[in-house]
Length: 287
Image 1 (tube, rainbow, N blue to C red):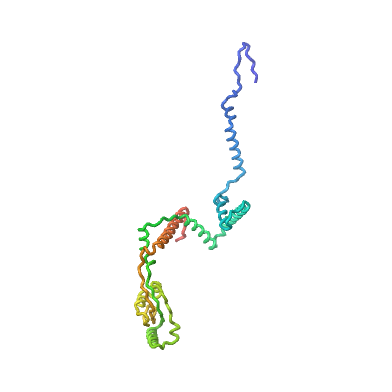
Image 2: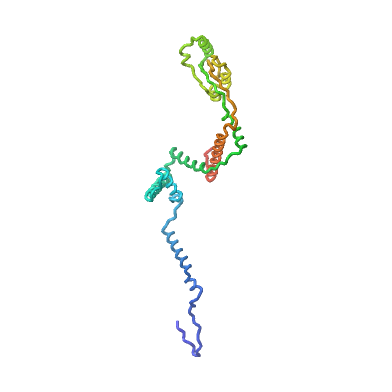
């Protein structure tokens, strides 16, 4: 737009925008250009690259890559070549895809073997991360006393037994005892005889009862005797009795420490899994 100067010769002020305005200065800033180009590239990348959920992302992390190398070295005693490593990584990716697709399609459901292997792998991961400290002497002593029955050496007995049941059991047992003492027992008796060799007394109590086993242990060695139990009558000959003894803690110190640590690791592992369970809503289906 052109203005005609006034007749008196005065000059009118110009209406053009000054070249050194704040907007013009900002427009010429290189940093602004860089930020605008970066924002544009980010927008374009977001538009052409869909977001990926964690479940659909397969990433060969440095840890995965190193584990592949370590497994190869363990088997071949050398590191894989670049081409071999690329092939191994391709195989890992294919296996991961196959595994995830199997889980996505529920192929693990209803297959107890697959379910157990997956659970076992998870348990190994959980328990492998458990750190167990050395027990104090007091902890070890208390733990030992609570389980002393597992460590004390029990009485051991060895004996022959011929069982008799039914309404005539007592008569048959006493008659057979007389035949044995006279050396005229029939072949059938020898065939029915059962041998219990070097058996811990506690292992016999579930079958015969503690009272009956105590009676056997109290018999004179080598003498046939008729005894009654809750199951019937028996002809018994005690062959040997070795009394047990209490074990001192210092005799099995190393064993105790290892078993204490195993028990502690199991408890900590179970506690860790219980903590994981807090992230789930559990419906037991109980009435």
